[in-house]
Image (cartoon, rainbow, N blue to C red):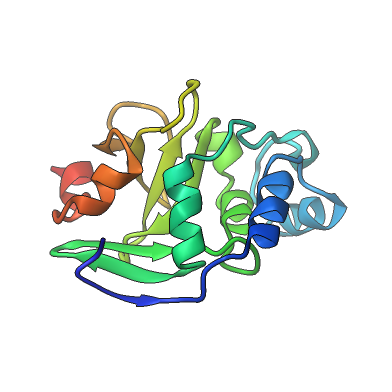
Length: 168
C-alpha cells in the first residue's frame, strides 16, 4: 500500500472493539478536567460530541495493519494516530478541540508538518471523504480545509503533499 514507512503492531479485534465504543462517548471527568486545564476559552467540554458514525472498513483495516506508525509515498506522509494513548485518535480529537471547531470531523493522522488528515463524517456513508486542515486553524469555512480524496484508499494512493492542497 505504501512505498515507505515504519509500521507498528496492528490492533487486535478486541482493541478495535474498545476503540470504536470509546470513540463515541462524550468526554469523561478526567478528559474534561484536562481540557479545562488548558485555559483555552471553549464551550463546556462535558457537552462535546464526537462523531457517532461507523468507522470505514478501510480505516479499521489500516489499524489492523498498523496501530500508529508512519507511512507514505512521494510527498504524502501519514503519521497515524493510535487507537489509544497520548497520540491516540480520541486524545488528539479532544486536545485540539476538534468537536468545537470541526464538528463531525475525526482526525486520524498528521502529515508531519502540523496538518491533520481527518474524516468528514458529517454525512452518512460507508466511506468518508478525507480532508486536510491545519492543527492551528481548524474550521469548516472553505479556506480552512481541503479535500484530499473521496476515500481513505484514494488518499493513501496519493503522492502529493497535502499542504499543497490546503495552501495552494
